[in-house]
Length: 563
Image (cartoon, rainbow, N blue to C red):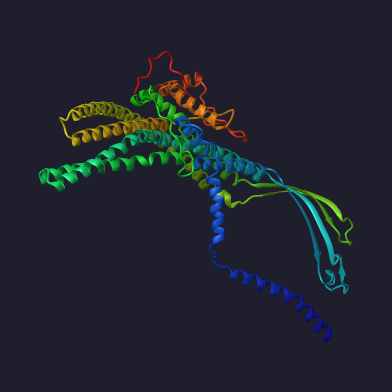
């Protein structure tokens, strides 16, 4: 008896020791984790990988870049646009994954079970209260198991279906965010392009004028040293030249970075040279035209602004979230079936199939049902109020953008007239200077004044184009159609040019806001289909779309006043 007890203890120790050693090793490994900064090689590899993407080769610049091509390159190569495209791809993949959540679970399993002794047991006679005294077993020491089980929860299917609909709306939200980024990029490109044009026009005139001022300053110092003039007169003359030179250098600092900013928006590597297509002189004298009424822009903005459409999709998501909350209050129904195998030799049937159904209900959910329903409805109301507040902000942005455009248009007219006057004055100073009737300083100052006036005119023109782009952004205008036959740079450039030239015609076909409020039924009946109201949606479970008022052409009305 003593020998068997010792033998049993040894066997227990031999089985416990490896487990203890393994546990200690795992604990030691967990305690040994320390912060490990990037090595120099890993950091260098990261930089090489990032530069390989950032400085990826683009279509070569074979000619001067027009504004339409600059916008097309920004759409194709700008990194912010790529980020939004990747976010949309991730949302689409998430939608694809959520569809699989609606399928039942089919689990295949296989295993091995063993023990070091027999799983024996005795029986108890309930009538006599005595043990039978015989030990029996019905399980092999070593056996193999396997099963193929099918499980489907009806409640989980409903929840997964609603989650899939939410993910479908998230795809559309990602697309609206991409649209918003593209619209912002287009505004930045337009402003940078016209500032770069101003820089190209004026920097060529700036260099020779700086040389003339520098030469006159050297001559003034020589005259001061020779005491040809009175000291105070010579010093004032030199001070005026230095102040003029400082103004010219300040102009150069303001203009020299404009072209680099345009290149960065187009996705060009820093410092890569490129030429800008210079607009014709008539284009530089003519401001952009805005032939759309403010009320038509309001309707266009309410139907097409990415932020409003995003909030509409958020309202769908909130509605589905309400249904998900209510579904979780219902009892769950599980349906299951399985094919099983067990190598246990004592079994009469080593292969068998089983099936069944089970219903379960957490009764505590009944207590929380009113609070859950109230919270879900409050979430829906919050999204609705947020969209309505955003609608008012959009209307205000349209009004402010149109007002700023009109004010800048008047300022441009005055600035252009002043630049013309200063150019004519410079011509007069040049003529009398050649005749010796005025000194070199007067001629230089007239040229600097004319240059400053030209710069102000060109910069106001750039601000005017920026205000025009702000009107487009406030109205939610897309520079590209919904679908394109190709994605090459030439097709993108052509599509941008067409979109920029036709958006005002589309906006003029909108019903005014006051008419929308007065005749919603007629507006919905006679509404044409606009490019943004027919958003192409990815495949998703069907659901009722949010009711919106569609655009309606204005019947035989007078043309909108030009801004």
